[in-house]
Length: 184
Image 1 (cartoon, rainbow, N blue to C red):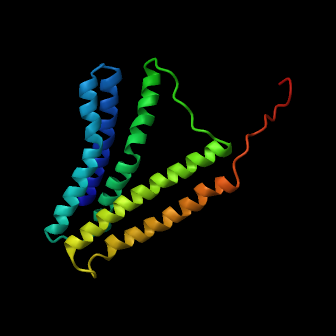
Image 2: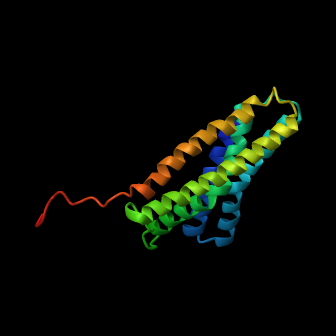
Image 3: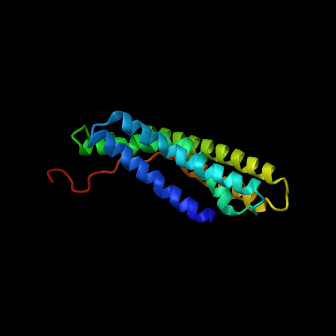
């Protein structure tokens, strides 16, 4: 049942995001847009709350319960950036300036990769704390294995992301040379 709620919340997340942006630009309803965009993180909060209530009611902990915590952590850490990214593209579609492109080479690219990893660390920290909160609610170390194991798996992904992101500090991308040559 919780997996269906996760799918429903993921759909609702994108529906509220698109509806909020369309309200802003197509309908020029700023207040309605703000309300709809505030619903984007509220959907993930609702999912986590439902997951926690399920655990408090005696449900066996599953990876789905941990996934609800992961969603909320990611939503908090990356949500504003995701909304800004989508907002810039839709604004451009409705006559605004083209959105800024992230740097693809050099020290600026390396700095952006480090900042993105820091956001990932924030998401992992929030998600891990929420998973541990759920584990404390269950209060049975043998049953919380699927929850707590998710922290370690995500931690491994975070470590790989660290190596990848910080490698650009040591080995920055260089601009590509135009292969067509002069006069092309």
